[in-house]
Image (cartoon, rainbow, N blue to C red; front, side, top):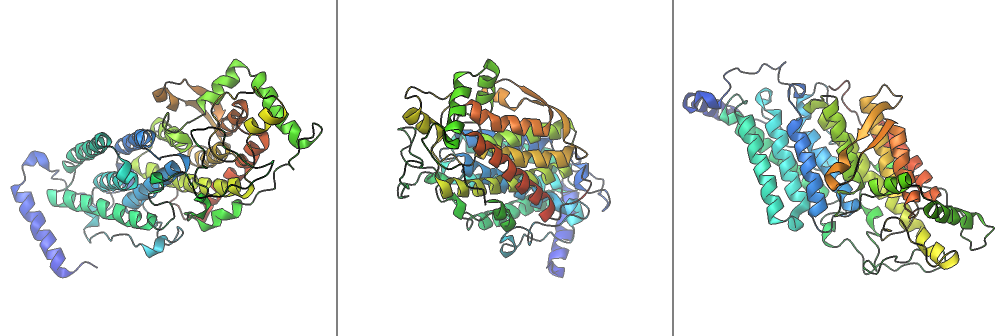
Amino acid sequence: MLTMKKVFYLLAFTAIVWRCTPADQVNPVITSPAANVTAKYSADFLHDWINLECLLVKETPGCFPPQAARVFGLTGVTAYEAAHRGIPGARSLTGQLNGFGSYPMPQADALSVQYHWGIVTNAAVAEIMRFSFGKSLSAANLGTLNKLEEANFEVFRKEAPSKAVAQLSQTLGKDIAAAVFEYSKTDGGHEAYLTPFSKTYKLPVGPDKWVPTNSKFPSPLCPDWDKCRPMLASNMAYAVSPKPVAFSTDPKSEFYKIALQVYNTVKNATPEQVEIAKFWADDPFATCTPTGHTFGILTQLLKETNATLEKSVVAYAKLGIAENDAFITCWKLKYDYNLIRPVSYIQKYIDPNFKTVIGTPPFPAYTSGHATESAVGERVFIEMFTNGDGAYPLTDRTQLRHGLGIRKFTNFKQASEECADSRLFGGIHYDMDNKRGLQMGRALGDNVLKAIQWPKNVK
């Protein structure tokens, strides 16, 4: 609670700053309560932060898909918490996210009408990225992060009513990030980038069970990721799947048929199918992972529609929460069933010389992480950018930065289904993995949209 002493000090300090600060460093127009809303702020700086996060994910050791989804999720939550006070009718995520109420957000001062929401968000996002990448963040990338924060602040502080308000805004942002980071320390994924592979996990043994597919990765990736705390507890209801097709080596069996489908698809792949497989591969350390790809699409959509800071923080929070939980639910199923990958089955029972189009990742098959995460993106995009029909002329340019081309779609469902199909075209997933992943991701995405009281009609 703000004391009278603190109010007096703040007002006195502000008055001194007003008298001593050169005119070109302040905006002499005091913002009225009605005008200081997040919708008045550009989101360009926040889009730059998401693009930088893609680079950091790509270049930070240990940042595999589950870890990357968690980092993007924390960034989305932090950006929303930093800017939501400037959104009419918006509620904090504290008390709405799983366990988040135990980590109260810093309270804005009584003069919060004066806060510069760009400064608050800039400071908060910079700080949560420093915290999230932690010990593995290179000195060069830390320097890039710090420079971006400083450059944005230099621009924004000239827009603030005074130096005092600019400083208060910066402090509030950093305090918000610190609170979110404290919350993250107890979710089960804290510093997971340091030890992404488990050397103690005892692999189940059996003809239907996963075995390593690459000598570089003899241990499975994140077998205990399902123990991480989901941001929405209700999302775990979707981590229940029909059992995969019963395993069999009989050429007449259903399992043999779905493996043969993979084999025939790869052997007879068209040039476009090969292109699709590579476009959506999203390999860690070559790209910014599947979640980074989907966040990149969101950033592109926000830019195309001239979304303000208001709509941008809401969109990043929705997608971040959904992506974080998509990998927790998907990983639960992967290690519940520990299903053998197509390449292992095909080489043993169909063709020992079989090769996949893209590399098989070091974890079980069922279900597909790509299908799951792209489907949550589909649901968020439909809700944020269409009237509900999903129609949108999307040209995905996000992979140009990784040396790949573009893909065009007429609606968001088409894009997510192509992402799912890409895993079949690449030879690394059975079709049932992809279909179940899409089903689970859509349900999870819809739950994120309805289970949280999001602000309405954001711009």
